[in-house]
Length: 345
Image 1 (tube, one colour):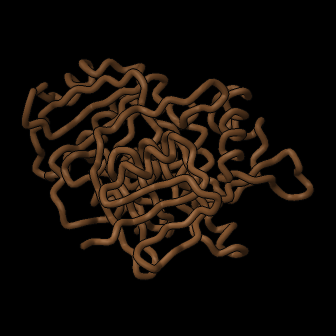
Image 2 (cartoon, one colour):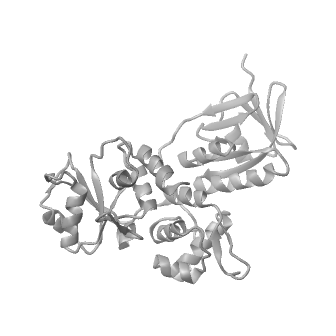
Image 3 (cartoon, helix red, strand yellow):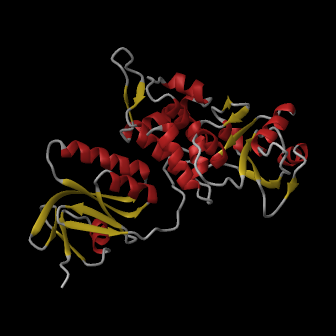
């Protein structure tokens, strides 16, 4: 007979419900928090949150590291729902978790549990004063990512990201609360510096959503040179259209991987209607079989911090990573390769 995993501790009703959602597990309120199976018992610290996303996962990891150096017990994270990114972060950093949808991971000496039941993604909602890193707040996050070793004052960050002082301050305040930002040097008490760049990237990549997106799929007849990106870039430059190449096509240029790039993605400035750009490119709008995807976002936020490289205007490396990982055609594989080779963390 298989031994049941026993979960005990100062469990709230919500935490108790989540703990009991794991098959072959029992959970009971108790003064001391432990995970036990058979004659083995492991002291734990139980942390319950209704939703655990990338930001919350990194906060739990930080707590785990702080306790590990002094107290030893692992942390068991309980949540009604966890995101795929959060589960990856927790697993890679040795934090056990159980969620109310049936996902679980516990890896201790003589005790291993792993259950994976991915759920449909849902958009993150945050309360007032706690901005999700999307839209202009996402641009602030990218500014921080591009210069992670810099001491940032609110006024400097607002100017760099071209946002209001209030928007910049709200992002800094939330990231400091999450332990992703910390106070800067002694001579600049009002400044903040990124303390966990990996956590910042993971949080932005999970939370970012481009607002007001329009897109057109088109087919551009390949030229003799065969490089569609260079051909389109040349035309857009001649027509003075502000653009940025992004996604898998841009990632493949900077970190080649043996995979086909069926669709080349360009972000186009709002000032240029996509229909006019199609005409400039002598392209054909198609429902299927497109080899080019033209996209626009509200306030052209997807073009933030783009730069010229090898006769093409490329999105910044973090935007390239973000767009690549959202591509359904092996994009996540290309994105992780790009992150390892180009970003490095």
